[in-house]
Image (tube, rainbow, N blue to C red; front, top):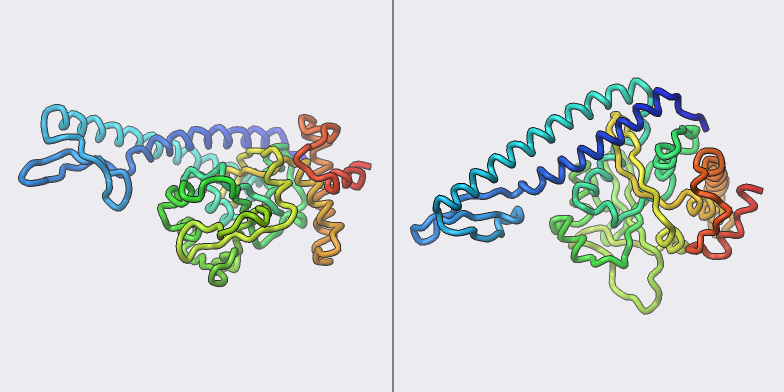
Length: 329
């Protein structure tokens, strides 16, 4: 683990601030996405406000001075929003070049694109990044870089909170499901198998859709459209699901900001340590699990005093909390 220089820290902070402005600009521009148009019905023109890509919407009334003013105001607002977004994108692109020069570019490009698509779809709070990719968020939050050997991974795990209403998530995904969103990030993504939980792109980078165990009384698959990924239940994930979350802005291989929601670093470290001791865990993964657990525990102790191990995380099972001596002695 290596601390960032003051110059690197400065540009990490600048990137975070730019991204917050970018998020605001994207949201403003998105409010103009489907537009207004004149629609003729029985020889009468009406001002029509679209609300989705299928042409659904509502009439704002027949053509008149009032509706013409509405159209003019809307058009002017859309132009301003688009120009603001374009300007912020240019500033981020300039910052991205600096980030690359300072070697702040860390998160794999495909992971970054997927996470930005989720964010723009309004689903940032619905999915938590878990597994190895989580380490990039802890790096960004604490101002350090881990050894690359701890970070290399050919997949990303998305933990979905199945307590949310799936129909709402499906609507935000435009009815195309999670696979449709993945294809926006990389058109080569396909389900590995029918009704499976994993998608892979042409480079064999994998995205897994996982959920915490729901109990025997809960039935039905967790999926967002036909021919979409179907979430798989993974034992132990309820502890990460219920733990507090950390929000960070990391930086991808191109120097661009990446919004990441991840579990509390203490929960991650304790959970990874617990995984390393499971008899059912693949032997080849156990040493890496423990190394990642200890690295994050060290990060918390040295760089993130606000996350004290002294305060027990009540969301974690006693078997997981018992791993604390393994991490900090």
